[in-house]
Length: 361
Image 1: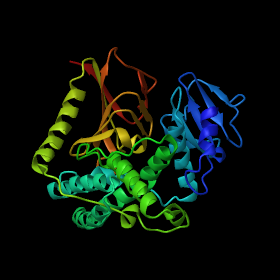
Image 2: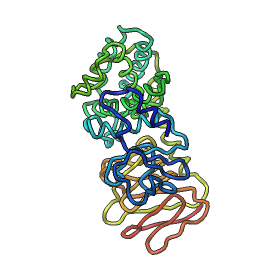
Image 3: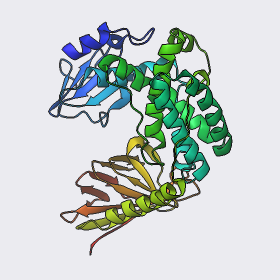
Image 4: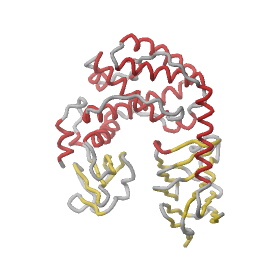
């Protein structure tokens, strides 16, 4: 595949060779496996007809016991391939470059003072990318103040995501040559924002410390913001933005529940459901203990792909103390239950030990 050869030819990160990273690409018709040392038997000459069950997102997963990048795109760009294969490299070489995704659900997005500092930092990064070096010195102090306010757990989540997703986005941009932009985005887009701030910090490090990649690759434990940051003060109405956060949460929940069609409610029995996989880019906290998953969710005995689902917490944490109830809406035809199994569009569920309600308005 020409795209894979192109990525391999570029020097984007010291020690990273995309041709040594297995990748499975689903083009809408079949899944093709490249660079895998021992393809599983279901791949005939490296090809699996249809979407391989392990390939559910642009991500990575173990295939045949080997960590493998996964891409769902008919014509994946070199940048996308570089992004996902670099993630596999990170996990093999630098497993500490990551964040605890459980901390995303408790991140204080409704803190108005912290949000004001976020906006100021974003504005400053834009100025720094335009060549204002003094803005970087101010941003470090503003970020220090913000991290002191939101606490060590939330700060560690941002820094870990900047190393994980920010650096993968940086590698993607080195391949694609696309411009570096920093959109504000909504206050609750914490994870998405770290993609862009990580990319911006890495881009600025290219300008001011050409050896920074080798330094980080050699094991330097410092996060990107301790190497470079920038800020200026914008005029923002943070109280208004917080009100909009709460309104968006309510609107998302209302639009989900108001979808026409059949509704399915699955309630756990004596033991709650526990999440094994979910898509962190497509989740929204919509209320206390309530999370709307808009693309993919896997609980013990339940898999939902390509349709939204609302989970209700069984404990203090929105997800990781277990899920008490799962609600699905918008089925055009009535879902059926056979032999304790629900089979419906985008959903499979083992209902043993659980109860289910199926109704329409």
